Length: 222
Image 1 (tube, rainbow, N blue to C red):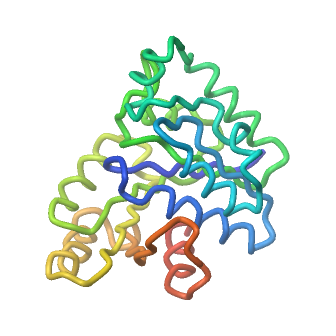
Image 2: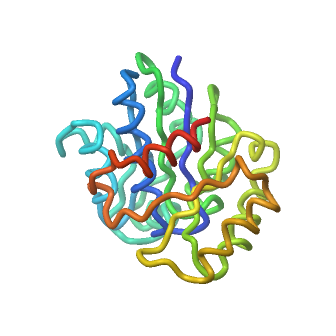
């Protein structure tokens, strides 16, 4: 069965898809059988399309990679309620188990932040704790003012799963004094090997074969 990499974050719009797509591409280049999925998505399927592209799949694969899509741009629980649907936790865990079959690695991109409600009684943290084969949790945090607090809050909320976690501190488009100092201080608090500076990529489909990106991905998976 595949080893599972969960990509979560401190918020929505922080770069989870960019990091997840880079992970999928890098693992694929290493000759491994990789599947990247995003179980929940609401408002638009651009993130899922980017994941499909990263693994050489067309838009027709989106429904397979993203079984629970809701048109309203709300947290998945509310979007599902407004669509008259209810997604049981057991369904999601079954989807993750089935997605691992025949793969070496399964990359799972979450929706919103770690504690964003996905169903009536669960969020990404709950699913992470219940995922067999969990190998790595990647916490995506933009390197800006507030990043240290956000990263520490998510790591604390992960509890025991934080032992398997890495923080992907996503660089801003241009260097700033805040960004230059956040990395060092966060490494002091969490551990040098647990915080990785991830280069700025404007879009998930941006070329991710550069050396800096490859080094960052390798550090996240080490």
